[in-house]
Amino acid sequence: MKQHDSIRAVVWRDDSLFLLDQRILPQQQQYIELRNAKETAQAIRDMVVRGAPAIGIAAAYGVVLAAREHYRTSPQSWKKTIAADMKILADSRPTAVNLFWALENMQQCIAAIESDPFPVLLQQADKIYQDDIAANYTMGQYSAK
Image 1 (cartoon, helix red, strand yellow):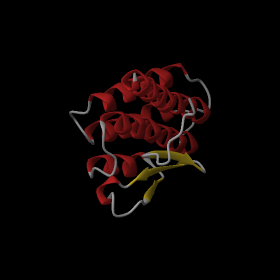
Image 2 (cartoon, rainbow, N blue to C red; image 1 turned 30 degrees about the horizontal axis):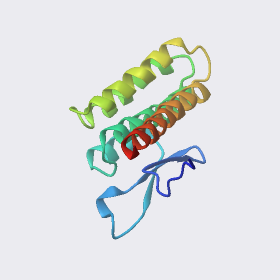
Image 3 (cartoon, one colour; image 1 turned 180 degrees about the vertical axis):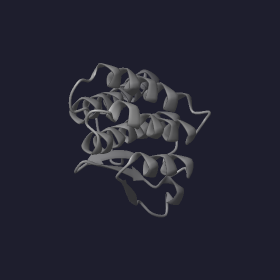
Image 4 (spheres, one colour; image 1 turned 45 degrees about the vertical axis):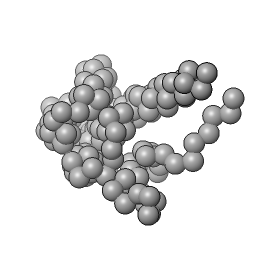
């Protein structure tokens, strides 16, 4: 079976996070570029992105953006300074289970990183995203039967 989708709610491209603005669907298909954790948290709060898995995925990429910024400005103390952005992301949707799951997942990765966090955290955010896509296809196959 060919796996295909034509629209993604979350896109990582050119070291930026792009979210499909779900507030204006179906009249328009427009993506918003986010460059840091604060913008990501605001987009989650404003319901640019909707649906529990997509919110968690967006938050995971928000952590990637935060880690890149904090490591660039303070490579020795980025693990401490990123805590404020993690809280901002957590506060963006206080009842979102997937949001907290993704943040905890990223926090566990952070604890094990000893150098530049960007590639490791980007890989982890990508994994969270790809695992969700795979789970959706699996559910679709079961329900098609």
